[in-house]
Image 1 (cartoon, rainbow, N blue to C red):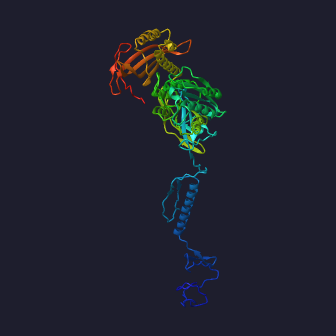
Image 2 (cartoon, one colour; image 1 turned 90 degrees about the horizontal axis):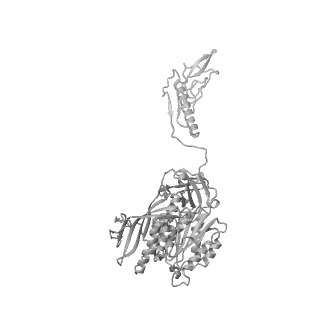
Image 3 (tube, rainbow, N blue to C red; image 1 turned 180 degrees about the horizontal axis):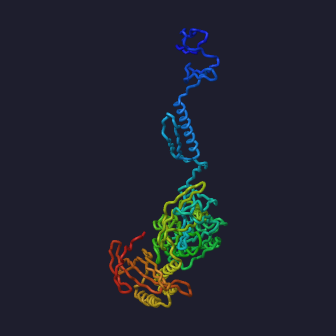
Length: 589
């Protein structure tokens, strides 16, 4: 028993509490030794109440545990179990757990019939974290769309670790799964030096301006510098490189046949160059680049043109092309043009190189020639032999001559790269290119024939079975010779502007080509400009295989005294007097 005042356990033999002296309650029975004691809490108070029951004639204290307390403990255990279950599901990646806790029948506890626990989704996987990819930079060098109709486009590109495109990345471990074009998978990827041969057409200026030294401090002429530069270029090419080279030299006229056709014998080309001299002629730069484009187009695989010139076209003699027509043709064929100029940079050379996907290099007298050429070599040839080629299937339907977009993306285990959306021109069909080349050759040879009063210079470019053949022959050999004898020679001046407006294949297999040209001439002792919109029909000679002109017409013609002149009519071949309807000076550099 315990003291009712201080709670101290009492000795059953004592009448008073030994702690506080309180008298024991006399009515309280003494506890038998067999009675079960209720354990005390730390503060001496009982944690639960008890009731006395009789068991086999003995008094036993039975704990009186509250039903409410039992239900509370059960609820706590169930909720704690639900929390544990939620945590286990969290780390296991399982979401939206619902735990239901039901009350026992007859219990006084009142709780919600269900408890919903919906944690925020947390993505936890056992996969290792992806490494941070390094940035890389893609430079698209060339796009070959000649197989567009068959659902294939080849893209030649280089990889660099910097946005200046100076540190190339060379890896044979790239696979097609690492690339996408316009967000779609590609069908093939490989290094170029394993599958393709790079074709390079060297175009060298040997005009009269090349006989002079670049400045008053050097004894070497520009011709010597250009010649040595080309030789150095060839010598810098590794012997094991898979490359083919062609050589075309020019002055007053673009040659009908290149000096050396494409071949892999670099020593032969270098020996030919070592004896090359200027012929004191004028500069047919654009015509020669046009000729080089048509020649280079016949080669398979990656290809480009590199032209060595002094950059001076002041005495030009271009009769079949202009700076803009060179750019247009280069884009249509997908062939970049690189130019090396000795002297100051000229706008047209820079524009041709930059707009065709090439580069312009200017070498001055204070430059280290060997160092400059090494830089050019690494920037041009090395880029092509170390580049990659991928093939993809285009989804967009475009006609020949129309532009199509390309956006190239790469994600390798180490690098990631993405280009902007680039525009390229779908290549026109092969026979259309041949017909255009035939008309270009006619234009150049016609001017040469008229200025030299020699019809034979253009006779192979005209169909012998056509009325046009005899008409042109009589005009040159009779009319123009007669004018020359009167002191009024017919002279064709170089073109100021030129562009192909349209090309259409006719039912009989011939082609009708409409083109515009602007050129200067003397009229009533005054220098004026004539703008013509001409139409030629060309057919392929079954014996020679050349595309020849068999008819000619002029639908529009205007005479201008200067750029601000609105123009006056000129008598056309067919007697019409319709003015030229467009701006003749558009796209003139």
